Length: 121
Length: 105
Image (spheres, each protein chain N blue to C red):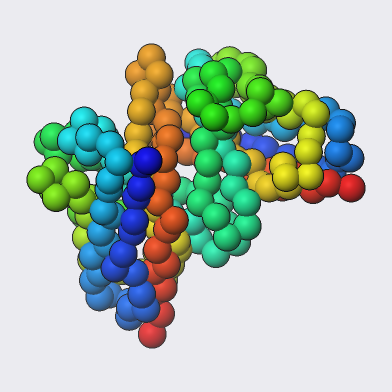
């Protein structure tokens, strides 16, 4: 059974940093691209960042480029999101998700339960 | 960014057929996927590649469309289908629709 368990969320002041982790099990982690997707309270979903199976390629939405860093440790089957210079608009539940592709189109087939990040003074 | 537009809400009776639409601001070919999210839960994949049913998802769910206009159909609707449904495109980065909240009468 695929399991994704996020951790590391919490309350943080604007401008500070936080690092999220996502522990994966039940599948061969190193074979899959991984993603972070967030959802602000009572809002819709927003893709944040992606990383290739090897970790050699990373992708970010414009609003987090230069502030967030996605990484992975395939030996530990763990995905990370380092979030620096946090802003109030980064407040959201952050989900990690596995990605699969259909004729080159990526979709998110397994999701963690999410972890809440609140940026406030 | 490719913008996805969904109707905000729908209300139907159990046993009826419901169609949830998603319109893209530009063609996304068949790079459209659908998710169901119940309150307090993570999203769940229903349909990928516009019309492919994810393993384990009931056959009551189906998807259609290509280009800019897509539809998720539930037939027949059951009480457990009360949820918000999101479309997502992966033709140009990844964007989600704002979601359609499905309520049962």
